[in-house]
Amino acid sequence: MMGILTVLWEKWREFRRDFLKITVSAALSPVMYLIVFGLGIRSDADGKPYLYFLIPGLVAMASMTGSFSAVMQNMSVQRLYEKALEQVLISPTPLWQFLAGQIVGGSLRGLYASLVILLIVQPLSVPLVFNGLSFLILLLNGTVFSTLALALSFLAKSYADAPRFTSYIIMPMSFLCNTFFSAERLPDGIRQFISVLPLSLICDMVRDISAGAAADRRGLVILLLYTAFFMSLSFWFIYRKENMD
Image (cartoon, rainbow, N blue to C red; front, side, top):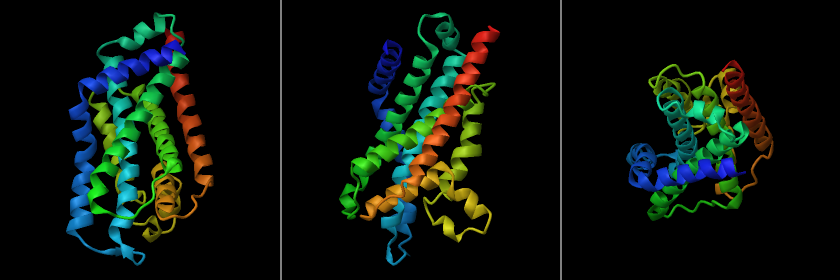
């Protein structure tokens, strides 16, 4: 467990050093979306104020982008430029502890981004419920996208690939996966595909809880399967690299 704690301590020091940058980065895009879509374009969703629909989507999206960016950028720099991964490979630190530390650190960064958004929307006095289950789901969301970022970081050939992966994967999901509008309005085929993507499941569950309803627990099972798949890819990449070296 010392390997996990070492990685988390490094993440904590980085968070303290760049606290303002990290906070502003986590808040900027969601706040712009909140102003433009939530306050600038006043409308209803299912007979309720649009903010009831938008805020849970922004909270879920913040968790996704915060966790993905934290792991993707950090691992890309460490692997391609600092060559820190090679040092881990020859150190006595178990590889699984190094990977687990990266995933936990990314998940916590995503949860922090969600909390920033919740604090920002407090003055709006929107009567939405965010309880312990909501935060557990958001933490799981961060785990999914941390493991995804970890797997993709091993495919990056240069530091420029990190923003490319964000453009190819994170950006489309940010707009299509139940964040700004319901995926039920999409055409058949596309709608079914979008509905099983991680962010869609998270938005549905967080939005249900915020409205005082019960979340569909099947979404948790699917998210755990995503996590297991991406984590398996990450372990395969890093152990293959160790054996090749």
